[in-house]
Image 1 (tube, rainbow, N blue to C red):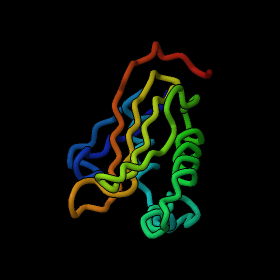
Image 2: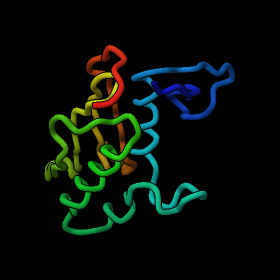
Image 3: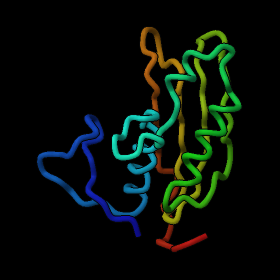
Image 4: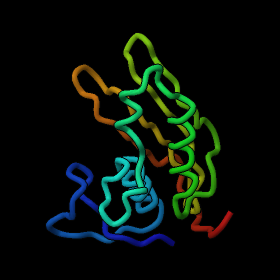
Amino acid sequence: MAIDVLLDPVTWDLPTKPAQGTGIEVIRQRLMIRLRRFLGEWILDETKGLNYMEWTTTKPVPLDDIGADLRREIETAPEVDRIVSGGTATWDQATRTVSFTATVSTEQGELSVAVSPIGDGPGNRNPAVTIGIVTQGSGRIGS
């Protein structure tokens, strides 16, 4: 079972009064951290992260690369069993945004993942990541 300190969900920093989390909440938090990390951002291993900067400057938008990189980042996360549905990147010409959605099976239940790596509203070009808890499992271990 996953056990960790829960970060502040707004600032993504350690809270003034730390709380310990377990299960699906910790898996959700760890996946959020993985999907929000830019390539080269972590000084201990600059090969970790997603190449958001290259994706925003490449024309045409590399949908296959974006989808493959996001799938790899999700599927290699600890406690993640597999992507159950979705897992492809799509381009919306009208809003000029890329969207990626997937339902992920974990050891503790299912998570819905939504990533908008390019464009998230007018004037904001930062990636947006949303992960919700779909179902909580019975605490089973393994696939």
